[in-house]
Length: 373
Image (cartoon, rainbow, N blue to C red; front, top):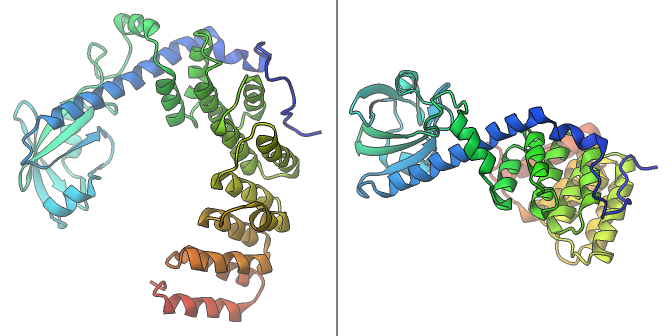
């Protein structure tokens, strides 16, 4: 019997005991805090965009979330390449009160001096910053606070909680929040918030919750959510297949095979390239190399992408399959002639098999293609 049963009714509306913990009262306060913090972050970003739009267009500028620990990395490559020196430079940061701070710009990041700027201006992680390059070594810095009456510690006051209690984000906002925090237990608390407001039947939200529980390894809850859905779309199926692919054991392989067929025959969903990549990965990790290869050559109506062949090549490396590995590598050499990783994987396959002459042949091929650096 499969560890995860996908055959139960999809119309049940009874919340199982396994899910009750996400709707306990103590979760509500944390969920409110989490939702408020997410909203505050979004507000700060939107206001920062407004600030940037109103700056002098002759001055280069960029927007970045606050960073209060470590060095502050400047990530707009175009601005850095065109306007900033590649050498270490002493910069001046001026806040909105015209207070100057001296910082060292080194390797596209603010190092020495940034902590003082951060501390003196009471920055928190959810603030947004806009930097305007007003002189070759001088930035005017605009700080857009994520929190108003809440203070710099981000704690909720009475007005904040009252606002959040009446705040009703749409499904897109909730799904976005769940996607960002899918690997965090805060996703469970948002689920409690969702259940309390009767939004658990929304398709996009349930799709996002499936990812949350799969990332946390809660496969039984994921299974219940999937069966609970009154309808499913491409994202729902893709989420399930991706989870099964990651599980990589024979029990889940059988479920993955059945779901892949059911998706096409019952729900008339045409498999995209990502679906085939998931299935090749699923079979390959379970050492079903032949079945993974047949999935590509027999069931795909279009040419397989590098992602599909890459999944097969990696499976051959894991299980030491030289013959199929050579086929996958040849395809990848054609599709991605400049990707050194494919050559390196083939060399490791040969190395595990003790075929050192072939390892040297691949190395010479890399040199000929200029990939030996």
